[in-house]
Amino acid sequence: MDQTHSIQGKVKQFSFVLVPILITQLGLFAMNFFDTLMSGQFSTTDLAGVAIGSSLWVPIFTGLAGILLSITPIVAQLVGAKKEKDVPFTVIQGVYVAILMALSIVLIGFFVLDPILNAMSIQDEVRRIAKSYLVALSFGIVPLFVYNVLRSFIDALGLTRISMIITLMSLPLNVLFNYMLIFGKFGFPALGGVGAGVASAITYWLIAIISIFVVHKNRPFKHFHIFSRVYGVAFSKWKEILVIGIPIGFSIFFETSIFSAVTLLMSNYSTSIIASHQAALNFASFLYMIPLSIGMALTIVVGFEVGAKRFRDAKQYSWMGVGVGVITSSILGIILFFFREPVASIYVKDPEVIDLTVQFLFFAVLFQLSDAIQAPVQGALRGYKDVNITLIMTLVSYWVIGLPSGWLLANFTSLEYFGYWIGLITGLTAGAITLSIRLFLIQKKQFKQLH
Image (cartoon, rainbow, N blue to C red):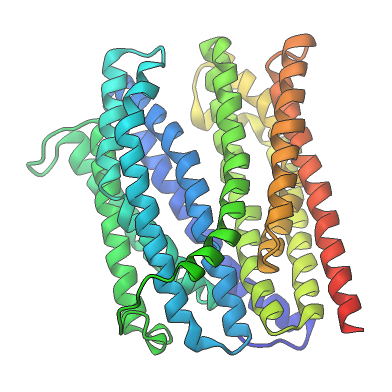
């Protein structure tokens, strides 16, 4: 990345960083979408098994992968401060942490997976598919976590289109592997939903190998000589990665897991209500990729400017990103409001479920503005390496304000199941307000230091 001297220059550089991240996130979202869709084409039981397996895996993965996102602001600030010689050591220590985390997940899963699945009121065959799906997936966890470190390094340099290309290459391969292994094509056995787990594991190995090759052979990455020497374990660097990363990971976990918790609480309602809730939530998650991507881009550009101690530029980037998020999400929210029924019809054909989904999508419209603020602001705060207070704010917003208020509205008012969605909106709004105040205070403090 380069220093910019005008708003126009910042818009251009921010767009250069943002667009590939957005395409990458949509590509990763599409992988999960095709896993679910293609498993459902095989059988309803396989769909249920993959859905349960995914619901257990996704919050854990997003939370732990969030820890590795600390590599992005650390490297961005090192590059901004012209300390490129420290980058390879940092990245390799991140790889060590990633491998240890991945192996720990596999080990813990070996002991707790059966008790968790046995505690669920599901059919034996659904339980078997869910377990086998996760076991198959586990063979790709180590390369997946290593890829996340390398992606954070690549993105920190502002070259986010490389991550985009790797993801876009892997998406059709993942679909092909799904086709071969779920349905038993080209001489492979028909594994059903379990095949989706095998396909994902193979894809994770491929994207890790491609990333290692790119970092080792391609400019400008090869100039950092990431893999040119063997570094010993340095717990001091591990501490820096984890001190920044753990709050990031838990912040993401608190946000993603609250949606899983609401889905669990709504299991007391009818199948039609649950299906409508899931459809609306899936589409809301799709739209969330935009503010999430803006937040990830802000971590890079803000971290770069903070590392160079150009605090005024960091502030301009921060609020530019929030503005882009608000404008984009407002436009999409208006479009969604008027096209709720066509969107609902993509997911289901049952008129009753479509009607309920349309109602849930109304609340998804209200999600947009809060998400448009809180996700970019969180990304900017990570660029400042301000993560501990952010962790507390997200915990309180989602789990102390959002979920309890939703439970009270659902169980003690006529809103019923819609109460949970109002609770989610309340939590997201509380997060947007408190995190914005935190960002403003940090920037004010830095402004005083300059004067």
